[in-house]
Amino acid sequence: MLTRRAFAVAATRGLARGLSSRAARVLDALDIAGDREIPGVYDGEWHGAGDVLESVCPATGEVLARVRSASPEELHAALGRAREAYAFFRSVPAPRRGEILRQIREALAAKRDELGALVSLEMGKIRTEGVGEVQEFIDIADYAVGLSRMMNGRVVASERPGHSILEVPNPLGVVAVLSAFNFPVAVYGWNLALSLAAGNATLWKPSATTPLCSIAVTKIVSSVLERNSIPGAVAALVTGGKDVGESIVESQDVDMVSFTGSEHVGRIVGRTVQSRFGKVLLELGGNNASIIMPDADLALAVPAVFFGAVGTAGQRCTSTRRLYLHRTVAAAFLSRLQSLYAAVRPGDPLAPATLLGPLHTRAAVGVYSAAVERLRKSGAEILAGGAVCRDLAGPLGGGNYVLPTIAVPRGVDVADPIWREETFAPVLCVGVFDELEEAIGWNNGVPQGLSSSLWTRDLRNVGKWIGPAGSDAGIVNVNVGTSGAEIGAAFGGNKSTGWGRESGGDAWKQYVRWSACTINFSDEAPLAQGVQFSSTA
Image 1 (cartoon, rainbow, N blue to C red):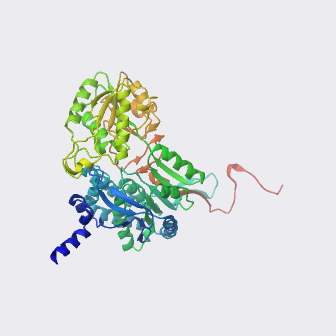
Image 2: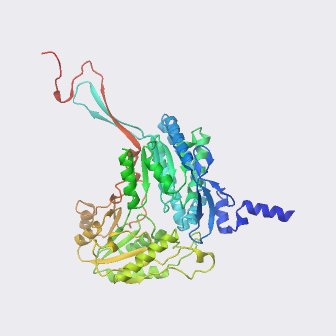
Image 3: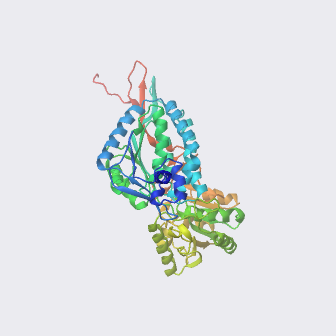
């Protein structure tokens, strides 16, 4: 009898189907069942009748859980409930919305480490980065609490006596967030916090490969909404594949689409939303460059480039893809950087000492291999890496591990796909320059414009870099790497990165509808610009 009982307990923990104790501990801490299908739709109630999504651990290849995604009927119903929730939530006073966000912040903070471990388990980034990602959600919730009392319009002087002009922000409607696998928690947090503060309902369609992160977060958020008698569809969730995403983007019930992903898909999303005159926020490709000047502090610059290129296994939108070295420091810089690359070892992303986790999918390993092969065929010198890891022992042998790569192509030609196209993997291409203007031209010569970094101690270089003839990226750093932005400033890029802005700064202004309201409190009704329009002579 005891044996049977022990077996039943093990089954409820996901061990009956062979789920590793490593994975089971992470899922159990967030009350995620590994032994049965998990509903992947939330609109005030949990359900799911669509296709089954498998959550696969990129470090080991094991199936963590199976999630039942949204059917077309469930998506239609969720959109309807989101609109109903918006009709209620838009009338909740903004400071009250801020109080709800404060409670969401506290609930997230209470589960920060557990959620961070889940990010590591399901996405593959190392533990400290997983926890840091959840901290971003906590931080933007903090920010939005204050913002809820400061989402101000303004008073504009009128040329007409007895008149005032107001610019007034009001809630927008339903905001759909289509997030990517590489930041399965933070990007949603950036959008949800501002959207809730503005008085909108939010519909989240996460990456099909990270459904567990979205379910865990939605459970936490929905518990706060329920305690405050707020409709759950204010923060709805619909998991699914390409068909679900397409239906959301096409829906007239969605007032704004915030999309994070590839340039190719972003173009389709942008055209589709614009064709129905919806609002769209795009966060697309990176292809970011760091420039090292002769006076750079290499003790700071080398570790920053190392993190930028190797952190998250090169799968950040802001990862350093291109490195431009002044000729006088190129040899010394590369020597130090190669030493760091030689010391890094792939490992379990949940282990505290690991710096290099896996790529997210098998397909990503193929992208990495194709990029390295293209570099070899072009005559590039491979200084480090350049191979898939095939000798890892134990469960990690089933993971998607590659060696971070440093390549020195024969020259810099920003029209060449080697430099022009983003490879979403840890591949760093190096070029050598003689003048800052040359490096700035290379920095700006690619279609993307997300993040950029200049390392110098010369104030004249700084002025040129951040000025009108400098970097054309959305993030223009000095003595800071391309990767690892804070939430206080708006995050986003220019050109084919999409021109979107999320998180801090003025990003909140995209989540409201603006009205110019002219108010006449006089006894006259003059027309502007002195126009006279009267039937009397």
